[in-house]
Image 1 (spheres, rainbow, N blue to C red):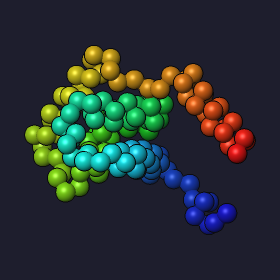
Image 2: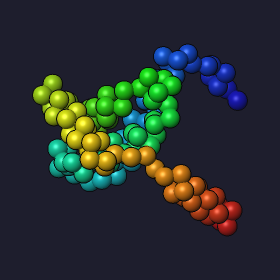
Image 3: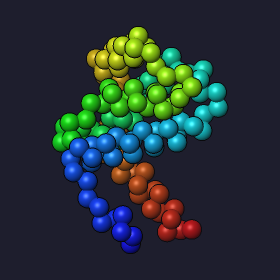
Length: 128
């Protein structure tokens, strides 16, 4: 145990840490996709990012007052650092997010799916 593990964050710092962890996890996973720039303006990428943000921050968003739309914008800025979003692109992205939410396409991961995945991973660890 290191000294850094003893540090406890306040609510504002904890909010930043939760958002940072979410952005980092999404960035690492989507970095596996070759030619990700081709999908920058697609609904498919937006839907995936929104669903992951919803799954990771759904319970924490109310407690820490996290704006999930801003998290998605941060993810896009981290995914494409050479081409940061302009103000107009941010508005278009926010409208796309609203549209996906209205159509019911953004949702968290069902508990049964999460529990099944966790159980399968645990069994794989025990068998190997």
